[in-house]
Structures are given as C-alpha cells and as structure tokens.
Length: 325
Ligand code: HEM
Ligand SMILES: *[C@@H]1O[C@H](CO)[C@@H](O)[C@H](O)[C@H]1NC(C)=O
Ligand SMILES: *[C@@H]1O[C@H](CO)[C@@H](O)[C@H](O)[C@H]1NC(C)=O
Image (cartoon, rainbow, N blue to C red):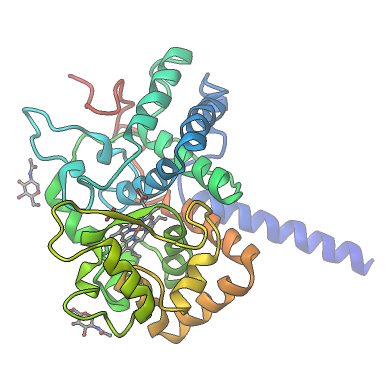
C-alpha cells in the first residue's frame, strides 16, 4: 500500500516535471520524426562522425559554434551566414569567431546530405544543435537527447557578437552576468566551461597572462611552458591545446587543470573565486558522472535560448545564405 502510494506520487510528480520541461520551450525531442524526415538525426550523426573521427578538433569547433550561435540572437544559425552585398558584416566575421571558429564544412556536408534525403525540412539551427550533441557523444561519451524544431534567422550582425560573449580576460562577475542575460545559471557556467577540456586556443587569447610577467594566478611552470609555445612578438598566432593532459577527451580533466592553475584563461581561473563555483568545480573534479549529467543538461538549456518558431524564421536552403524572397 505504502509502496503503491509512493509510486502514484512518483507518477504524479513525473507528470508535473514533464509539463514543466516541455513548457520551457516549444521544441520537441524527435521533432523530425513527425516532419517526414525521420532519419534527420542519424544523417547528421553519420556526417559528424566521419569528420570528427578524422579530425577531433572539428568536434570542439562544433560545440563552440553552438555556444556562439545561441548567445547571439538565440540558436538561429545566424553564426552561419556568409557576408553578402546586402549584409557585408555578419557574425562569423566578428573577432571572437574569425578566424578561430571552425566546423562550418561539417555543417555544410550535413545540410547537403539532408537536402538530398528530405529537401527543405531540417533547419540549420537544428543541425548545429545536433552536431554539437554528436560531438559531445563522440569526444566525451556524453549521450543526450536534444529537442529540435528551431527555425533559421535572417539577421546576422557582427557588432552584436563582442558584447554578448564572455571574453577570456573576464572575471567571474562578468561571465556570470553574460550567462544570466541568457537565462543561464552559475551551474551552467561551470558545467559548460568543461568544454575547455577539448580543442585549442590561439596564443593571442591568453598571451596577456604570459608577458611581461607570468600571471600569479597561473602555475609558473605551466606559464613557462606556454611561453615556449607562444613566443612574444611571434609572426604567426600559434595554437595550443586547451587541455594538455587529455586534449581530445571531453572529460572532467578541465576541472583538475583549473584547480592546479593550469587552465589557459583568466575566465577559467575565475571559477575558483566564488564559493558556489569553486564547490561545483571540486564536485565535477571528483565525480565525473555528475559533470557529464550537468554538461548534457546545460547544453539542452543553452539550446533553448531565443529559438525562432512559427512565422519568425525560415528553413534555409543553404546554411550560408538567407532564402531569397
Ligand atoms: C565561460 C566563458 C567562456 C570564455 C571566456 C571562452 C573563451 C574561449 C576562447 C578565448 C577560446 C579560444 C579561441 C581561440 O583562440 O582559438 C575558446 C575555445 C573553446 N571554447 Fe570557450 N569560452 C567560454 C565558454 C565556453 C562554452 C560555454 C563552451 C561550449 C559549451 C565553450 C567551448 C569552447 C571550445 C570547445 C573551444 C575550443 C574550440 C576549438 O578547438 O576550435 N567555451 N573559448
Ligand atoms: C548592426 O548592429 C549595430 C549595433 O546595434 C547597428 O548600429 C547596425 O546598424 C547593425 N547593422 C545592420 C546591417 O543591421
Ligand atoms: C570584474 O570586472 C569588472 C569590470 O572590469 C569590475 O568592475 C569588477 O569590480 C570586477 N569584479 C571583481 C570581483 O573582480
């Protein structure tokens, strides 16, 4: 009897949870199953796997692309629009994206495969969301479902990028404020920063911590080794891995690196500067499963930012250009 009551309460609570979860956004898991493109997610996954298994860095690029898309005008694929006569200065040309953002060719290949299989059905915004999810599955063994049904936007403006995105020299107050502006919490900041356990950075993103002095918030030996890879006044902007220990694994090594003062950015270090974020950091460091669960949850949450539905967007034919009127 007691057990049955407990069960009924559980079912009741689950229903409340489900209602809450779906009303948070108009997106649906498996959206394209109802839209005559039942294999959409498998098609994207096939393309992403092909590229990422050959070049893991592209997986990092795709996860960062999702972040940079969602933080500017919502997850609307505005990051993908090329410069055109009508719009000479799109988001992708802004400093945080150019020349560092990568993975555009993966999205193009997925879009071609989808247009072949089911023309005009799958949005570029959803392709980015699926591709980032698939990259997390491949590099992190972090599988999760992501709701879809986003439409593509028609506006992309480079001058909106810098004010919306956190910078590597930002302190925790600044990073938290930019996440809060998107409806994301301090937990989301810490969980999503775990993406800095994969991929690379250009030297220019952190050399201010190396010269003239190695930042006291950085391990001095780590700083000395970064100086050899990023010489002062170098002719070319070199690249180094975000995580020197497991560079291609989306894992909790990032949190150990931060605690050891061996992360690249001041913004990474700044996670140690509040009790709330420092506590999360040490939890993610000791319980990898917790990191994986929170990372997935925060990626889904990020995927709900400013999504376009109904008549507010379109499904682009080419991800690089708005449909002509
Ligand atoms: C918390 C504030 C954040 C700051 C200040 C920041 C800043 C940066 C910077 C400066 C780079 C190096 C770019 C370059 O020089 O090549 C980078 C790389 C990267 N970031 Fe972040 N980021 C933040 C949060 C995030 C989030 C939320 C994600 C995704 C969930 C993310 C994913 C990545 C990835 C995967 C890379 C490597 C990209 C590649 O290898 O192509 N970052 N980030
Ligand atoms: C881009 O945004 C800036 C700042 O909000 C604005 O001044 C400019 O007119 C916009 N450019 C386009 C092409 O809409
Ligand atoms: C963070 O940076 C802002 C802008 O430079 C500054 O006003 C603020 O005092 C800083 N906060 C902390 C906690 O260092």
